[in-house]
Amino acid sequence: MRAPAVGVIGAGAVGQAVGAALVAVGLCDRLLLASRSVDQAAALADDLNDLRAGIGSPAMAYPVKVAELRDCPAVVVAVRARFTNTRQTDVRMAGMHANTPALLALAEEFRGYPGTLLVVTNPVDLMTRLVAEASGCARVFGLGSSLDTARYRLTLARLLDVPVDAVRGHVIGEHGDAAVVCASTTTVNGAPVTVPLERVRAELAERPGRISAGIGRTRYGPAGALVSALRLALGLEDGITELSAPHGDVCLGIPLQFTGGRPLPCVPPLDDAEARQLEAARSKLRDAYQGVCGVPVQHLPVRNT
Image (cartoon, rainbow, N blue to C red; front, side, top):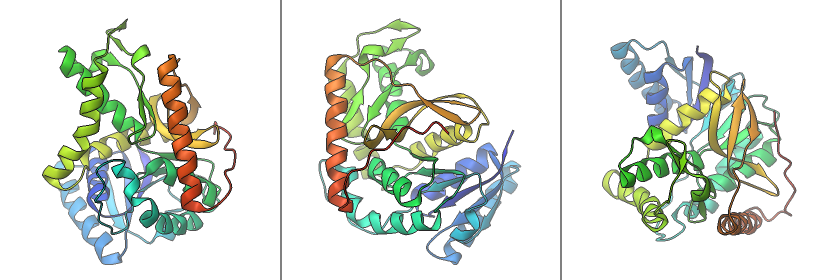
């Protein structure tokens, strides 16, 4: 089962990895690529079509303008402004001011868009809310906590010497330093487990930096998380993933149960420490959003559409 088309905006490291992943898994018939220049999008389309020919994928890539993506059932927003990130903490917040103008311009382009927008641009929780409010679109989600959760499961499986598939648990809240590890509801083979939280948190904090130091930036992890999210959002599969979505007066990472493409929030029970951490993440994101946009905080109802 495939989608008729998926759009990707951005031909940088993440956009390239997302495009390659979508072609490799054959998730759609047409992969529509938009970037800063037509030449850049055309070059990526050529490269991806070479990949398609080599592996026999059904997904054909085409360079397009952003306006041509409005007929796509889903569009991935992977744009990134040019800036130098020199931060040692809260590194994903570094692009806050640089990326806001580009995301606002895209939101205007997609005003009233009926499909699904999946935002990758950091700080993803803030950019997701920005796009949702500026575009008025009902289905805007951000990628972040799903990647954090994948890294959590991978790390815990290694520390406990069990298969990754045996681990069930979530990382929610901010995609950043205020991420919340839901250790109290984590299970291994269906049974509760004592999570070595200090070691887990250290790995989750250090892993992105190691990847960026070695190869420039993370790309394939986000691409894999996006493919999984697209399968659910497009109704190709049913299941749970953690995406940035409206939760109270902010957007932050929460588990969403998708059934036939419709999301239903399913935040797990939190112990007292986790609840405090989630409230701290909410407060941090609320304050940061006001600082970037200079607009009053508006209540965002949960949208189950």
